[in-house]
Every structure is written in structure tokens, then in C-alpha cells.
Image 1 (cartoon, rainbow, N blue to C red):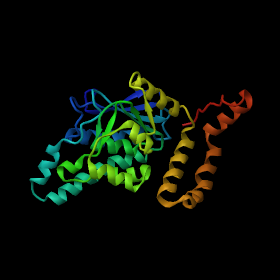
Image 2: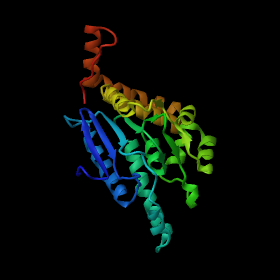
Image 3: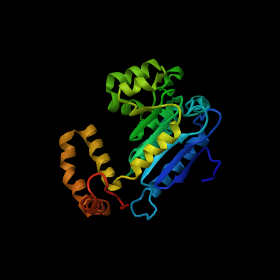
Length: 272
């Protein structure tokens, strides 16, 4: 993918950094949508445990004043005013859901850094990530109500997982823009960080996560997702399989040796 692609991947050591760069508003148009599809395919390869240079975490960030002004409404107009709108609309949502699900299914931690206004598809992509970091000045919204739509890139259901069904419906029904501090209280945003130095602070957080036990993080993701969607007992059933396998990883062996040799707080992880 070229350096001037509207969505691209940059490497920062163990981090794969997904950059949204479609000025001036980072609108999600057909070019951005196609680029996102290519990016998620590339991320699947970059995070493959078999790679010696595997990315151990993914950070999503945006260039410019805003994270995204949302979907370019021309995309909706072309479908609504053209032939077979229901069928073509369904295909659009299948494409967008595949992007969200592919990010959600990555076997490494994913972090979304929102430095400013984050609307519609970009917000839904953020909800597909494991951790959502926001600057103090960031605002979020699923504003599809203004064009007679419901958010359909997985946003309502993932909001319900984070904040509960009543909050999810409130946010979508009103179409309002919510400040980061409110969504932190609702457990949608994980952390609100100062505006000054936000980009580097978010990058530092992602680097810290990438330095952890990668295979164990994948197990954590699977257990938490199973618990939320199928219940704690279903997650319990998975523990012997996913956690037992950790004893065979270089991450665990190296960390245990480091802990015993150097003491608590100094364990290192070298596995892939």
C-alpha cells in the first residue's frame, strides 16, 4: 500500500499503526472503504504468529484536525437512488461489518486513538477495537438518524456490550455528539488523556501493550468475548484449552525464567 493511500499501515517496532489520512475530514468514501478492506487483510498477515517480525499490537490513529466526519453521504445517495437499493445496501453493510469483525478478531491487542471528532463508521471501527483512548477534546457520535439510517457497521451492538442496551439506544436515537468524558463514564471510552501530547501518549500506551505476553493477550480476548456473548460458564469451558496452551509458549517460559532470576516486575516476553 502506497504512502499516500487514504488508509495505510506504518510499522513502529512491534506496533502496526493504521493511519486514516483522507483530508480534510477523513470521510469514509469508496476509496477509504476499499483501502480499509485491504488493510484488514494485511493486518491478518502482519499479526500471524508464524511471522518472525509479527506485529504484537495494532494502533489506529488519524491525521488532521478530526478523526473522521463520518461516511461520505454520496455513498448512500448512489445506492438509494440507483437500482436494487435494498440489495446494494445490504452488500455495503456486509463489507463494512467484515472490516469491523476482522479488526475485532485480530489475535493481538488493538487500540484506537481518537484525538478529535469521531463520527459514524470511524466510531464503529473504534468500538471494534479492544481499547478506545480519547483526548479531552474528542467527541463521538452515531449520527445516521439524520439520513434515516441506523448505524450498521456493528456500532449499536458493540455499544450495548460496553455501555448496556439503554445507553446504546439513547446514543443512536438522539444522534447527538457526546464528549469523551461522558463516554468514559459510560464505559465506552477506556481512558481520557490530556489533549497536549495525546498522540505520543496513545502511541506509548500501545507500545506498552505490545511489549506484553502476546499469546496470553489473544487468550484474554477470546475469553472476554466469549463471556460477554455466551456467558461466564462458556468462557470457563475454554480455559483449559486456551490457557493451558500458554505453558508451551516462549512468552511464558521466558517470563518465568526472568521472574525467578530478576524478581517481580522485571519479567520479559520474547515470544511471537
